[in-house]
Length: 276
Ligand code: HPA
Image: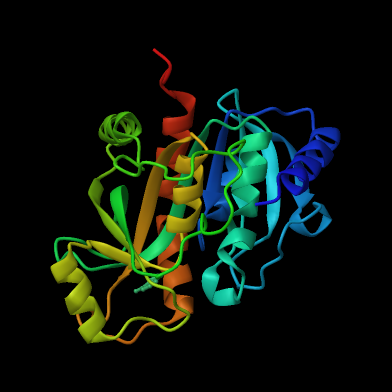
């Protein structure tokens, strides 16, 4: 990753907004409503930000939204980038490098995904406890700039256990049911075959999707605290009796959006002191 390019984007953003949030949220497909909970917003389209990629997937607004939730400063990525769109791993994680340069310390990554664990049902929210990268690619491949992070970053706790506990506590106090599980990254854009899902299940995956892992990997490398929240929008191929469609994914994500926003709002408002 080009340090100067990251600095340029961060410095440009600092001229556009007075916000200096410590927390960022990446909003997955159909989960963009969280920005409606934000006050006093500064909205910056990706297309204006130096070096930012631009996506063309339905359900993504493609903008950075700065503001407050419950008085706490946050920045939301409304729309993210996927490997299946043809972006390189470096391109699609560029925003995470920029957010870190802006001073963001913690990242909440969210997504819509397919359920493999048969105790799950469409509409469930799952806290990500770990991931499996089945892509055969990694955003950190290439020369390493030590100003960002170490050459061989540890990945034993990508998803911060304190944040998983905090999210569980918040869910309980808001009477929102949450599941927990391992998220497997599949490249897409086609949905998986039934045989692939059977294989992932044996490998230990509870859910499968086409995002999140690159951003979470980079965030961890950059020293950020990561929380992952997945919305199960359908049961995965072979488990589901019906064929998949992106419209179905968006419809279920939209239907879960109120619970999702309520949970993320609660998590943000009561954010724990991670330095204690
Ligand atoms: N597989 C992969 N990605 C997905 C799915 C799925 O079943 N549902 C939503 N995103």
